[in-house]
Image 1 (cartoon, rainbow, N blue to C red):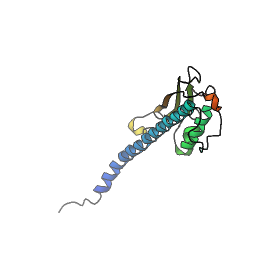
Image 2 (tube, rainbow, N blue to C red):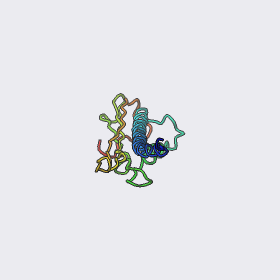
Image 3 (cartoon, helix red, strand yellow):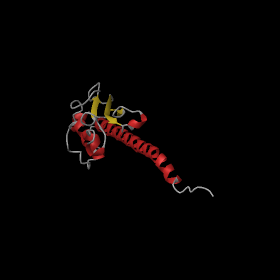
Image 4 (tube, one colour):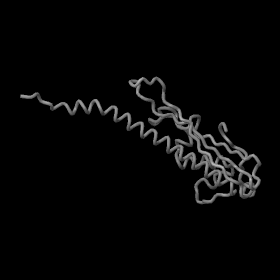
Length: 176
């Protein structure tokens, strides 16, 4: 008579489950990084469009009247998209890793010819994202891989931003 194999499935599950969970958590973490990158690209596009036309296309936005500075507007919009992206998160806070590195997003506005109509304006929104570290069992000794995510948008200025009361020259944060 053969031996009983009642516990075989439990043993196989115990061996396979940790690997499957590591892969699942990696996929979720990578998806969060892609989401932040998409948010940064959208914020750069919003900022470039705002500077390009010298006025907001959607005046119903909660950030519309917050400031006449382009960088302040972009940071306000970042808070609407993701407070973690706007303010940054310190490691271990709320169980998540560092997002935004040094206090959230860095916004850089580059208008080489000022707000002269026809000249280009480039808005770059960037942040650092620290991926969840691999388990030490897999030979990892670091605290996670840091990804430098950035979204950039360039548009031509259609009308002088100063006509609409917008300040595009001050308030850049971070390294451009």
